[in-house]
Amino acid sequence: MATRGKSINLFLMDGAPGGRIKCTLANWTGVAYRIPRTELDKCKGRDDLSQSGVYFLFGMSDQTGENVVYIGQAGVRKNGEGILFRLQEHKRNPDKDYWTESVVFTTSNNSFGPTEISYLENRFTNMAVAAKRYLVKNGNDPTSGNITEEKESELEEFIDYAKIVMGTLGHKVFEPLFHSVATISPGEESTHAGETFFIKRGGANAQARLTSEGLVVLSGSAIRKNTVPSCPDHAKSAREDNKDYIDENGVLQKDILFKSPSAASGFVLGASTNGNKEWKTGDGKTLKEIELSEADDR
Image 1 (cartoon, rainbow, N blue to C red):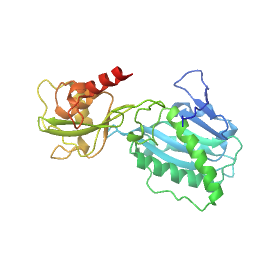
Image 2 (image 1 turned 120 degrees about the vertical axis):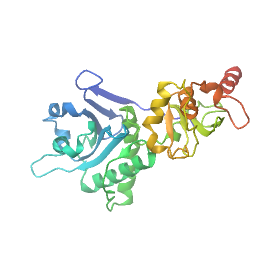
Image 3 (image 1 turned 180 degrees about the vertical axis):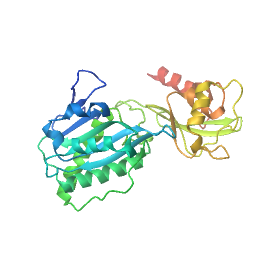
Image 4 (image 1 turned 45 degrees about the horizontal axis):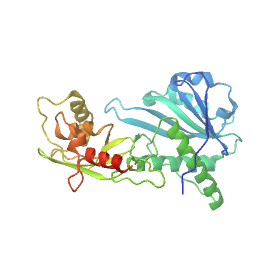
């Protein structure tokens, strides 16, 4: 069955793509905002940001350069303050100065109570940890609370829509790398989407998977320990950026996404390479050969 399309409304509140964005979906009671840290004060007086909701603080680690996220909940306080007030507290907190923008989920009908936001915080946190895209900064595992099966079904539907919105707003915090395999239209076949490719030479023994975002070099791959003099700067930088995930034997301890096959092969071999020729299937076909054969079949 063909995947159904979704109609998403993005309102550029400041008239610019880098500013605040309000996001809604057809047939969804949810409302999402992307708010840069520098634009929080512009949101004062918005009724829906005085409600209960769940929020995400996105930034980058100063130590490793890794993408980080903090996931929290905000209930309505006696003074009527809700999500926005909680974000302003985080902005004043020196221990949370890593974040540069927030994404907020609330509802158009103010239907979230303590039970709902606790459940969503728990599910969003566990989904982000499982996806392994971001370093999740939450210190404690939030409780899911006690909800009825009817309410759970309702909230899981909210989560399905929230995942779409979050990706649209530029954060793939819920998407595991291997769920990003290139989409194949009904009736078409692909011999390489999601297939494993290998490099076994020069002291390297690496495996990778092709996705719609690039090539993912898999955890457990052994890369060449030393680089050659002609190793390009981007490959050296990639090794430096990921040095904490390469053990003393040159074995990767996490999956690493590269935007191109050549970037991935350069990282693995520590040299200037042509990834379309270096990466091969188990039966020895190069990535380039497979792409050409698919083009001929169309």
